[in-house]
Structure formats: C-alpha cells, structure tokens
Length: 300
Image (cartoon, rainbow, N blue to C red; front, side):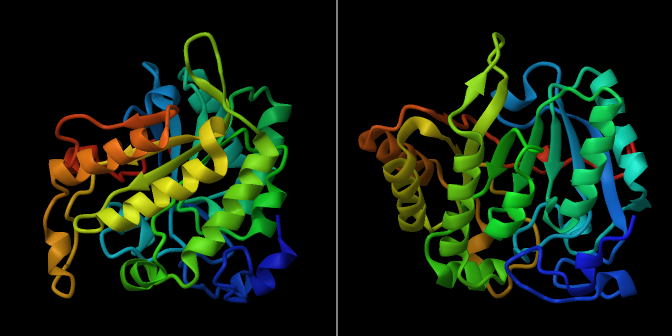
C-alpha cells in the first residue's frame, strides 16, 4: 500500500518533509517501508499492562527522538530490524493474541502510523479484539494523534522534560514540553479516564510515564506537578527509576551515574504531597540492562 502523505512526511513534530516513498529518510531513519525488530510477550511494563500473561509488544525500528541515553539504541538509532508488509503486521497482532497477550503494545510507532492503522483494520476484520496500546516518547503532532482516534485504546506517552534546554541537549528535540502537552491533551480527549477489567488490566485510558534522570530532580518535579495539576487522577502517572547509563556520555558526565534512591524518593514524596493517588512507582533495583529485551527479530 502506498501512502501519498509520505512523499512529504510530517508525521512527527520535526516536519522533515522527507520523501520516504522515494527512499529518503528523515530524522527517524525510516523510509516508506515498515520495519520492526521484535514482536513478543513483554513482562516489564506497568502491572496493568503486562499483568501475568504479558503484553504483546512490537518494537518498531527508528525513532523521532535522539536520546543520548537510549536503551534501545540498536533499533532507535541504528534502525536494526526487518522489513515486513502491512498484512504481516496484522498477522503478528493475531499471533500475539493467540499467545494470550493482554494487549497489542506498539513501541516507538509514530513514523509508521499510516501502516499501523491499516494493519489494525485488517487484524480486526480477522478477529483481533485486544486493546491497542500506543507507547510513545510523547513528542507527537496533534494531527497525527487525531488519525489514531478509534484505533488506539490506551495511550502510554512519556513526558520526558519540562525544561526545553534538557530536551535539546539530551534528545535533540525543540519545543518538547509544549508539543508533549498538546499531544497529551488530545490523547486524554480521545480515550477519557482509565478503565480496567476485573483482573486490573487496563482497557482504555492514558498512563503518562516519566523516566527520572540523575541530577534533574527539579525538572522531574515540574513534570509531576504539571501532570497532576492539569489532569488530577483522570490519568495515571508512572514515575520510573530504571534509568540505566547506556551509551557514550563523554559530553554528559553526570549521566554516567544511576539515579540515587534519595532523588527518587524525593520525587515520589512530592507527588504524594500534591495529592496524587493514581500512579505507579518502581521499587528496588530496576536500573539494569537485563530490562532491555534482545532485539533478535523474535516473532517477526
């Protein structure tokens, strides 16, 4: 299937205008062909997503951000993966459903939105009934999120930074905070408050993730304050301590260290002091490369 919109791609906020149909690649590294690196049950998401059976997680190649600390560097920056058809992606959705996945979890999907929508349509015609989870960096165009209305049940966006200086420095992104705010508003407008089944597995709603970075406690507090004061308990906030130093940090020596327990506890205490009730926190030692799945084309 040919998506004429990809002749001048504007799916993400970078507005590259790359002619992906002609083999050009924008910042994300993707041309017009669909490419994924892994499709398998995943057990390391929030409990309401992974449950005991696992989330049917598909890792797409390429990314619209350029985070210097990215744990998925091989697929996000090196674009490792295998080219597949839309019909094959639909088959993968159904295969994950057959494996008792609790949902279909689309990781870094932004640059393949057109392909994904067609695959969801096809899979639903053939019996797909699982919730669709859109697992994103939060750096999204509102127009792109609007395309997903009726196809996505659960939005799982990051909200990485409130200070745009950090976004530019660590993720090569301009105007990150305002962009993420507008995208999040559209997500909430689409799916509303969180709905869970009898087993506590999310069926609809928004969970906002914030991965804390070492030495950036004040920015984390600013993110937490914005999310809670804007949305209250209508969205869930996941405050993550699993930052793992992973990459070349010669220019960012403070990122070579792990987040301290004191920093994390301070952020959690701040969220509680605001009145936050609907949220997830991580306990114990989660900063480990063992949480990074092998990108070995499993399930592709």
